[in-house]
Image (cartoon, rainbow over all chains, first blue to last red):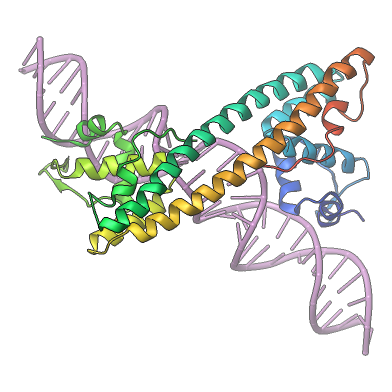
Length: 138
Length: 138
DNA sequence: TAAAACCTTGCCCTTAGGACAAGGTCAAGC
DNA sequence: GCTTGACCTTGTCCTAAGGGCAAGGTTTTA
């Protein structure tokens, strides 16, 4: 009997995650035993694998659901998928740039630390942070 | 009267954020008017500015609180600050590397899209995602 | 004096589950 | 047949850092 724990183990997910995908409409609710246990068929395995892949590409559960919904309605989701991939690519570029700017700011702040340590200075809290004049968050 | 809205505007924060910092112990609870309005003194302004700076460097509220607690106890927080900065620097390097790997994977997946579009293929959902064989999350 | 603009607390919402509780159920061994 | 351990069920609370809204009280301005 392919219970939630077993199918989770087979797809590298946690049982909780599998139930969450069901609750969020990414996978169809499986049959239940008389006692209420979820019983999956092998058909569910590749769908869960797909979800894992898509998540690894940075897609959110909602985006993955939209893709799966399209496909379940018999439409070809490739257009949506390419759009999403393009968006995420642009987003990742932005985030990399932000992190690199932050890295520079942090390094600058860190460099002040040693100098300040020598002089035993202190400003409001620690000159190290206050001297970091321009920093954009993630 | 320096109300929460005014001090928030003066420090570039939202009133909600200022109240949150108070609830989380980053700033001291200010005096209240008879009606219960928070009334700040000018002394609170640089502290809020410090919080903003530290956040811009990627520190969490909890980390910032630890720094401020040290300082309020009269100890010099520079040691903690340098430790935190070093940790965040290493963390940022990891995240940049992860994002760059993800970017490569995404680009690979995206490149498949156009080819698949030509052939009108479809796999489980869309070959685009399933062909992205190795992808590590953020 | 009346209305606009501000303040108060409290609650629900966001992501993608993790941890835990209380209780029911299945599989194995004796 | 029965026990025990491993598994399942639902439900709740928790994460970070607030945003948004509601109901109601206050201050300020016209």
